Length: 170
Image (cartoon, rainbow, N blue to C red):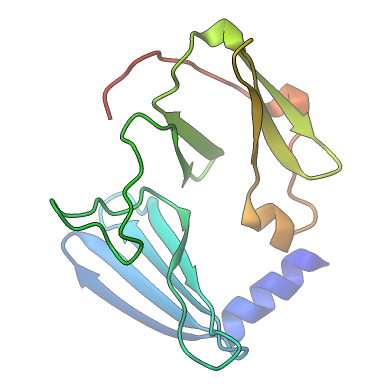
């Protein structure tokens, strides 16, 4: 049911596409005022970036919210509108979708593999990454907006595959 609603909203959206720098860029403008921009690799048709923008209560366009892909690096000395820059050592969460799977990549994990556990939250329709470090016990919910838009898309514990490479460069 929710899948057909999502497909109908894609069909009714006003679409604009262009080729630039080896990427196919598609911009969607939905009737409710939301905007979605996607970038695909021109050769492989792999989704590289998906971002959303919503109008504020007063009608001004908000900031782009990244859903898939890596955030664009800030230029040297450019701290952006927040004027505060987060540490390079913090974990970086990003999502990458392929034709066969959804992938979440977490860079800069500070501890070895046995400190982390991964499980599925069926109720929340998300993947939960927990740490069991004595100094810091924490967790992070990884969810896919696609699973929220399409009620039939969710994972089971047997469908999750993890790999861990400690201290890899970005």
